Length: 250
Image (tube, rainbow, N blue to C red; front, side, top):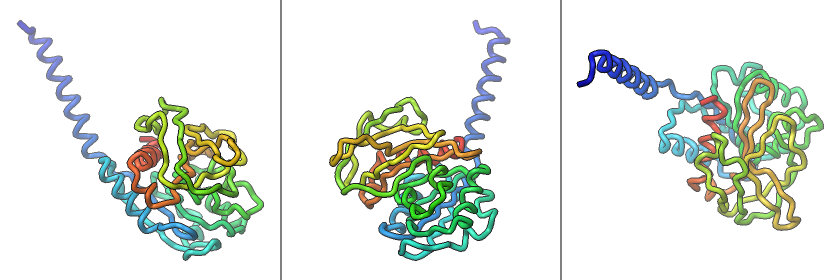
């Protein structure tokens, strides 16, 4: 016969776990700012793909999408004119492509918000954004320096940190849809490489998925994401959504 004390203990435990489950189900959605636009990619499709991926995976997100700056390689968007542009968001996703914007004051207004604690996810051409600038502030925030890419191909991606929270759903090896391999010239201090690919031209190994600590901000990055086929791929979307959660501290 189970004692009254044991029954009381079981009741307390049941109540505790029931409350925990209710708290999780009623958790506030993450507030995510997605900044997109510029050269070379189907940003409308990619934005919708990210939003659907989060919903499909049960991740509650309140999205703010800013698609500004046109389709060229140079722009200074209105959002960044406000020094508090990132205030109130759990994560900022950078999926923009403005390689020839060089204004140091403008760039530092962006990076300061991140250094002060605005967590980030950086995708594909965000690595080449502001690549014409002489200052390294943006590249330090990204965690890597890249100024060019190689041809489109089906690249093998090796998971080198399978125990990391971001990589928990990532296979030991994954082959991309047709996508571009970015040449990484430098990995900055604070960056932890999570996955790599090999150049078909040179045989060099390049980071393709990583995390970075930039000041108070947690940054997740991937150089893949050129093609719509990549943004329709389950493995890619899994790792990006995990990256969003990790960056938000979740």
